Length: 64
Image (cartoon, rainbow, N blue to C red; front, side):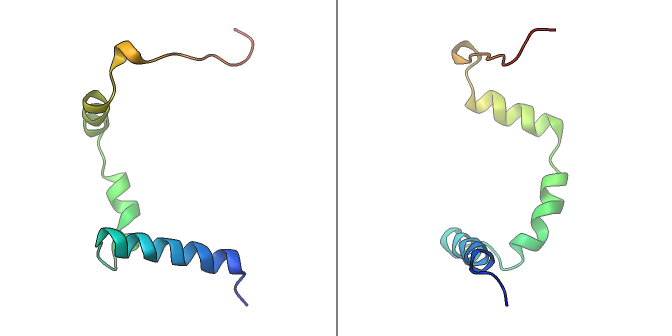
């Protein structure tokens, strides 16, 4: 028997696919799409969404 928490996770994923109108093979294709993201794409997305002047750096732990 599949535990209820597993069924809940599957249902959550299916609900997201339906809500956003994604293709039924979206979950199968997801790992390849993530691996296909380039460093330039990541930097571009960060530059469009983050303002360096508003960032804070938090250091946790003892300094080296």
